[in-house]
Image (cartoon, rainbow, N blue to C red):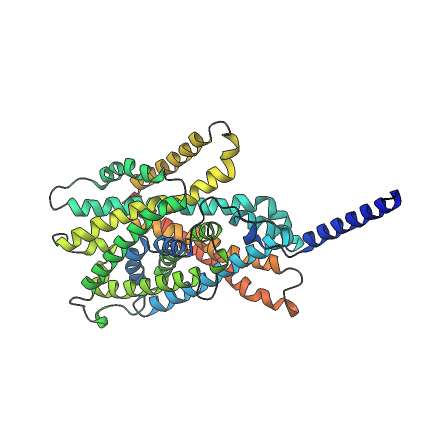
Length: 448
């Protein structure tokens, strides 16, 4: 072969290689095909984790919230909140997927998505991008710590009610006794390993819900003896509690990021729609009939209204306490990801396991200290629900979608941002009013 022929073949091969690389570079990027998840969860397991994560202590606290809004007004607004939150979850997940494709990134966390959206958004918002990660992480962390506090107080309060017929001690002692078992659950490090515990907890949860529903429909009072609508002053607490019950925003993103088939997560009959529909219906049934059954005597958790001398009550209280205890690690998983995965892991390269377990211990300690300081379920639920979830569940997803659509997909006269602006306003208003109402309740409790 001549030198010129060899050079010609070499140039041809080089051109073909360059053309192939160019095609690969310009080819559509599917983030789902580039994810590397060590322990991906299946569709069914993800569905169970989502439903169990949603049906936590909120299902037993919702009747108290319905007392504040009334048996007619409350279910209407609860359904609207459920639909609105499902819509916000959809626009958040879809916006994150668009940004992953646009920037050729396999996966984004919620804080990273907010930061990237602000960088791509309108010029007057880009200056806030450096603070986006800390802003979202702060809300998510406070919310997950709040959920941990609620779980600790719920379990300890129900255990106290369970044992009160034999002996009576302060609820704070039950909180202290829970420290070792709940920390042991927190040592489980991945979602797949949590799945068996979660399935077991879900079975207990469903059994307890059925048993309570039977109790609620036994000797049901007349609806006319209850308030059809609450007062304006009590509405912020209703919104805070309902948001707390229906908005596990950190869990929503974590489950999608760890799913084996994430494309089915937000499909029409996917994990998100099915999970939110099931849970919203359960919450409305519990809220209406729980309030009608017990009226103004309804406690922060409906399990505390059950007859303490009834063997069925004992089974419900103990069973659901075990269920919530097993779910404690699932809810704190997000807090561990925020503190350890996003901030501290880089400083513990020599002993990473030791560092992660130290973070898990710190999270448990914080939730227990707060639980001992204020052992009231309702106060944590309304405060954290109103303060955190109105922002990360309503306002920020709407702002992210505005930034993702900017500047070519806003429609004539920017009409597409109108729903987003409404959601942002609602989120800020709910945050202010619910937080104020929750803080007033806490001050009254501490001073009285």
